[in-house]
Image (cartoon, rainbow, N blue to C red; front, top):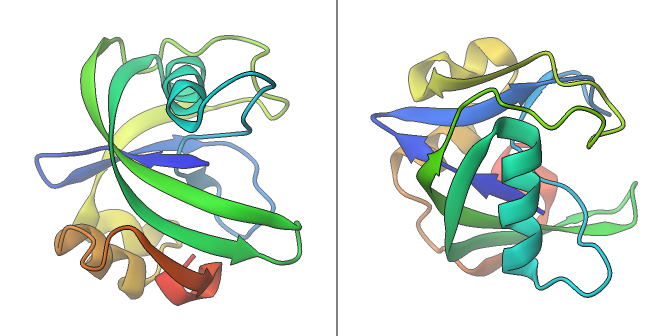
Length: 138
């Protein structure tokens, strides 16, 4: 599961090794036993970015067939915390940096124009099953 936090035309991202060509990605992770989806997202956002969030609307569901997982992404709003106050050891892949990146700069970090457009247009069709991750440009 991942969270999308957009402020002043910039998206909250983290820089760490991923299973794709991009090193920058949306913050998020797995749901632990006994957690709701919202609780897991709040915890993951705090651990990976230092940001405290309030979970908003469901943006999309996608299949990641290679990983055998369903990719669930929620809108989130920052309500506190300190950007970059990452919980050491909370993630198996070290986080090098946490930053708000201007939407216009996302293609230079390997994000598709499709994903940028979804962000710019506030995710039309939010709450929908979108098929494979490639349908949203990830």
